[in-house]
Amino acid sequence: MALSQRGKCLFGCGILAMMVLLVQQVETGCAHRESPKCCPGRNNDCFELNRRMTICYCDTYCQKTGDCCEDYPTVCHISAAIDCVVSSWGSWSECSQLCGAGSKERTRQVTTPPRNGGMPCPDLKQRRGCFGQSPVCSTAKEVAKILPHSFKRNFKDPWRRPHMLMKEEKPSYCAYFRLKQVSAACRMNLWSSHMTREQPVCVECQGDAMGRTNRCEGDGLQTTRTFWTAASVPGCQGSWVRERLQEDCRCPEHSFIFV
Image 1 (spheres, rainbow, N blue to C red):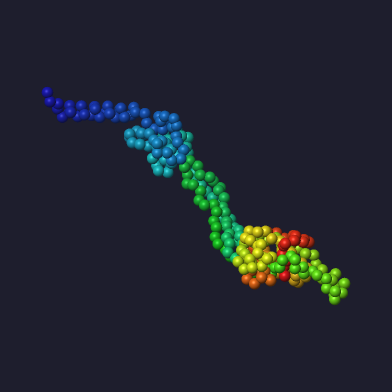
Image 2: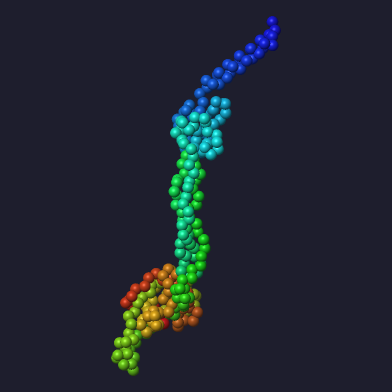
């Protein structure tokens, strides 16, 4: 016997009601995942079905993508995402080079770290170029003239009065350098042929070589590349970096003196 329209509706609606009931009885959400129920970071394998039988996620990243399971906040004990907050930029540092091209930088601090999948922190350091123009830069432009230590400058002049010798005598000091460049012409003379790159050298500033400022011209700047030339060897020249100064000092044999 054929079903009436009402009977068909009752039959179809009953099946639909049973399907809805079955769906409602299916366990869904993060609470019904196998361990671990919640996952840190981004994990595409950390998913479950929601009540609409579509995929939802139980990882921290779901807060950004908006596809968390409905029970994610309560099951995973997660509150709202907190973005990183940083302070204002600090002042720029001094130029890294006293003379010439260098760099300076500034920093800022994290005042509130990111939590619960919040936005990560931006860069905390900035750097930009600079050009050092310290008052001592004129010293960096000086070219030291050197001779081997065997050329003693403080010889005794028999024609000078004893009181003149006492007045003019000044204590020597030592400048310690590391050679950075040595020209090929230096190999043409015995005393300069031993000079090589990265070799540490001692150059003595004797009293007779000092100027009005009680220093020798070309004694350099700390950690700054300056230049030198061999006074008795044409074309023998190069650069070096001063590592330290020592007052009231004498360089050992086979060293150099300022001219």
